[in-house]
Amino acid sequence: MAPDAKPHNIFTEIYWVKPAAGGKRLATKNLTPGKKVYDERLISFQKVEYRLWDPFRSKLAAAILKGLTRMPIHKGDKVLYLGAATGTTVSHISDIVGEKGHVFCVEFAVRAMRELINNVCAFRLNMTPILEDARMPEKYVTFLEKADTIYCDIAQPEQAKVLADNAELFLKSEGWTMLAVKSQSIDVTKRPVEVYEREANILKSRGFNVLEVVQLEPYDKAHAMIVSKI
Image 1 (tube, rainbow, N blue to C red):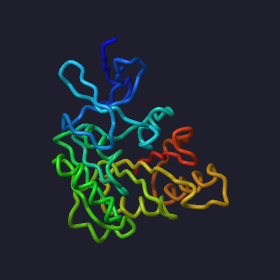
Image 2: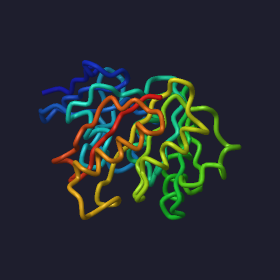
Image 3: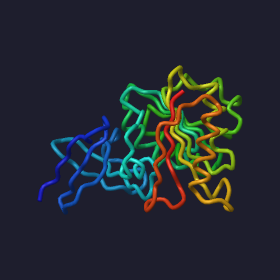
C-alpha cells in the first residue's frame, strides 16, 4: 500500500496521513524537510514531506483526536507558546503557521531551552526562543509582538492565571487562548474535572469566553485542553 495524505476535515494545515503500513495518523507538513524533532516518522507523498504527530507526546494532537472543534492556530498567525520545552508540540505549530507566521517560545528550564534552540529553532526561522519564566511576562515584553493565539502548557499551580497575565500584555483584541491543564500540578486532592472547572472559571473571571473543554484521556491522564476567546 502506497502512502496517502489528505487535509483534515476541519482544520487547515493539518493532515490525515496513511503510511504504507496502513492506518491513519495525524500529521503536519514538515517546514524543514529531512529533519526530525522528537524521532517522529517522516512520510513523503506527492513530493511533500509530512511529520506524523504523536498524540501521546503532544497534548494538542491529543485534543484534536479527542474531538476538539476549535483550533485557532492558522497559517500566517503569530503564536505565543508558554512552556515550549524541547519542541515537540511547538514544532508542529511552527509547521502550521508556516514561513509567514511566527512562534515565540517561552521556556524556563535551561536544559530544555538548549535542546529547543539546537534541535529546533536553529533550523526554523519562524521560531524565537525566550529563556524566561512565564509567570513574569513583563521580563520579555520587549521581545514579543501581539499574538493571535496564546498556547499555555506549563507545570505550575496557577496555570489559568499565568495565561491570563500574559494575555493582558500580548494577546490581540479578540484573540484566542489554548490552555493545556495539568490537574495534578494544580491540586492533587481534587478530581481532575473539578480542577478543569476551576481553571475555566478563572479565565471567565478575567474576561475570557470559554468555548471548549476537552479531556485528553487516554493520551494524557488528568489533562484537559481549554479553548477560550477574549
